[in-house]
Amino acid sequence: MSVSAIVMMLVICGIIWGGFVFFLMRAVRSESRKQASARIGE
Amino acid sequence: MSATEQFSSRWGLILATLGMAVGTGNIWRFPRIVATNGGGAFLVAWVVFLFIWSVPLMIVEFSFGKRGRKGTVGSFIAMAGKGSGWMGGWVALCATAIMFYYSVVAGWCLRYFAAAVQGGLTGENSIGFWESYAGSGLAWVTNAIALGLAITVVWFGVRGIEKVAKVLIPSLFVLVLMLAIRAVTLPGAAAGLEFLFQPDWSALGDVRIWLQALTQNAWDTGAGWGLILTFAVYMKSREDIPLNAFLIGFGNNSVSLLAGIMVLCTVFAINPGARSEIVGAGNEGLTFIWMPQLFAQMPGGRFFMIFFFLALSFAALTSLISMVELLTRNLMDAGLKRRKAVIVVALLALAFSTPSALSLSFLHNQDWVWGVGLMLSGLLYAVAARRFGVERLRREVVNSDGCDLPIGKWWTFIISVVVPIEAVVLMIWWLWEARGWDPEHWLDPFRSTSVGTVLAQWALVLVALLVLNRWLGRRIGAARAA
Image (cartoon, rainbow over all chains, first blue to last red; front, side, top):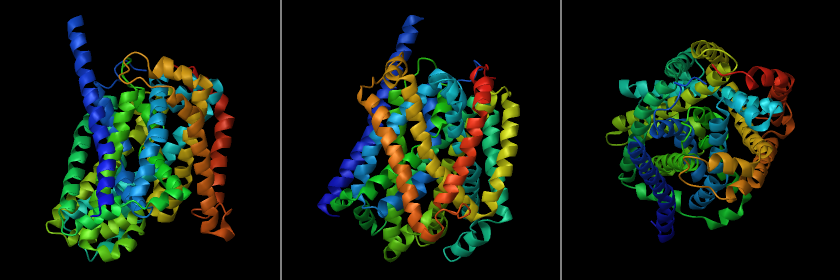
């Protein structure tokens, strides 16, 4: 593969898959916080 | 709205909405469009439009559904006033018209999955198999089976939709990932990656590349279809909107990227000489004629072919379920109980899917007319959001209680200005392109992919909706939903 194709692959996959994982982890952390708050509220 | 109709958790909502978004478009259209539009450069434009079309519109849809707590007609009335029922009606009718041929496509996927399991699909018979099946009575039967499955799920309400999504969507991700890994490990697959990611920067100067990338986002992510709005009706009151929208947009595009890698690496590894023919073969040609031939030449190809058509079936069914629910929800808002509404949808779907099941030309016509219609749907969302007040929507609904990712004023600008321009430009471009496909008959309403057929069918629907607008406002706008 050419260097430019490799760079493009890393950039695009990084943005899309990295973004997906980033938002997923953020949602997981948010849900944990909300559930912890709900338990404290009880 | 019935108090029991709610997603049990954030994950149920996200998986169901991902099921809506990830469909056949991710797997059979995206690879072809990337391959024929400049590879890596196209992907740049594609990522840009994720931020300035898909995710912003998803946020609008979530907001409307969460605030309006009714299907498309009722929520458009709730958000943009009593005179706006026709807009929600357009969104509903567009998605419903698509459902009437999408069920046929789902049936194709099921048929091919069954044939792959039975060993009835060999490389040599793929053309004959397709030509004897598509448009036949058996295609109507498989269409009815696909509808039956979707109807059954929707019969059990939101919890049924959630349970199915929790099984099918993770399975779909695993299948597509396995197929992509298999594809990149084939000898010669690197050429496919090169073809997919090699940027032809000069292509970014071609406005068509940008329009194709915008079109792919519009048709692929489900933003502006009314399906996200429908699922948002069942969100918890303190559920986040923006983070969920980003998660679903990126999740959907993740599957597209995996599918692109899977298809193009397989093509380049197995039959690189035919790549132009393969990617130019159209959605059905690539999926139902070329892919069986390619799998037949792959070590262990039969098993991967089973996985491929299983993944396609999961993608199609989960999207079909959301379309069935959209119409069901609107009927429930009009006063029908869920079970009666589902029966009505089943009968309508069986009847109106028949022409598409028996005629590929009719199916392509409907795909053309209502595919462009979706762009009008996107425009109507922006118009309705402006009537409510986009900045007010951002403050009162998007960034309200439960928000995990506050959205800045950039979103207000995108919805108020950018999305309407994108929608209008896209509609005009596609109709202009259609003029060139058959210059002598471009206005003929009976041609499969003419400008005339779009204008004629849109006019019929719009006139009917405008005539019924007051009735929609009285019946659905004021009524308590079932």
